[in-house]
Image (tube, rainbow, N blue to C red; front, side, top):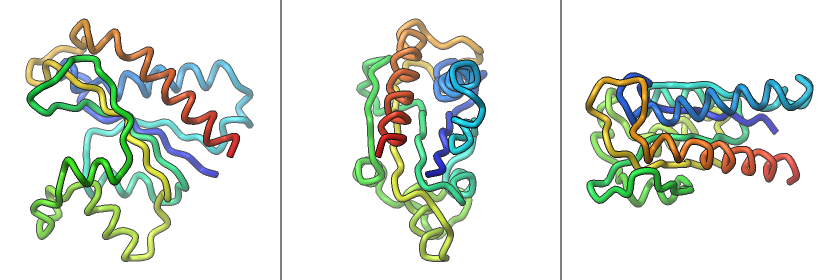
Length: 165
């Protein structure tokens, strides 16, 4: 099964780049630890867009793993959550669905499926609670930086689970 791993965020906005940093580390580990043929069904990338553009990245894949910064106003910086699309649907109800410029990922995936696009049956989101997504810095805060190895381990375990099914 073809799997895409997407690290989301802006790598120069302090903690917002946590997903990108996880993707970089995953790419390094996967390229060094397995023969290239073993990774042919796993594609690791980064993105800074959501909604329709994020959905477009997933076309042609059977499964997707997304790593992103998460904020809800009551954050414990560095705390990680494993979420499904149903979980995401519960915390981000459809808003502005008439505007293609700010459609949610859930709405974009639903629309893509309605149009017959081959999109992942399984989408797993690793959301890392963040502290600072406003200030310019290519370094995350201490708590978020400390969460990166755990997020990498969680995604690798997810990939292993996927590969053994």
